[in-house]
Image 1 (spheres, rainbow, N blue to C red):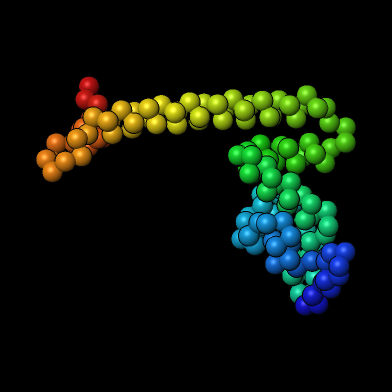
Image 2: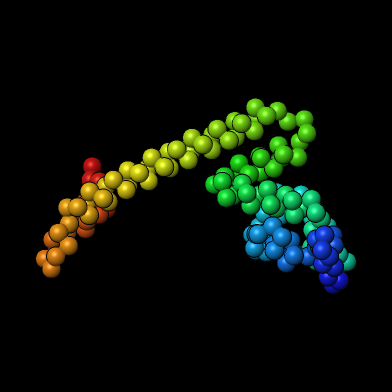
Length: 149
């Protein structure tokens, strides 16, 4: 397979999966996964069936990586990629996806803060000495007991 030439201006297009991964900051394994989910559309192949990524493909991969960095799930990313490529989209559609994600983030933050408060309280209650009594373990045990009806 012919390697794309590297120039000061950037790679020669199209690029191999390794180069696309390096340029986008996504591992080749995840890159193949995103392709299998249809997030990239049809990726060109050589006669030997090697993937060849265009500049637009790599740009889309960077968009996906940034979306993942923001915590969007794959369904939301698929919707965002579709909206991003759709020049007839309304910004209201994009805002709706982002607003939903923000609500999910707020719920997760609230849950994490509740866990933090509980653990902080348990740490203050635990003497941390040589005795076996431990409120941290007691709390974990209580939470793991199946409910009886």
